[in-house]
Length: 153
Image (tube, rainbow, N blue to C red):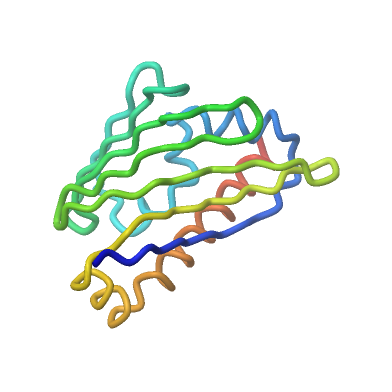
């Protein structure tokens, strides 16, 4: 029986919400804050054209990270981007991802949320290897990179 999971990390960014949204809705800019590229700089990736809006995709392949893709399924100006995340190797898994923005004074609070379901084997593997804790750290690292990038740009 599949077990639901949710990973959520938040970061306040000292930049206007429209600026942060412009960055996250352009997958060509994802390389500036994607925390997973640091794990394998040799990762090959392809960004669709157009690089933002519903239907935009980011496909990656890496010896260390495996293969997968993200598909923007919902894009709502200055508030949220919804996507389907498909991991195709080494395991075939899917997840829902949400990049949510809320106004925080003059800045923006960014929430990176991933939800899905795991079968027994994957639930056991995640627990033994501490994978949710690792994902929380990766998401937090990515949000710190996004914060630095948005505040400097």
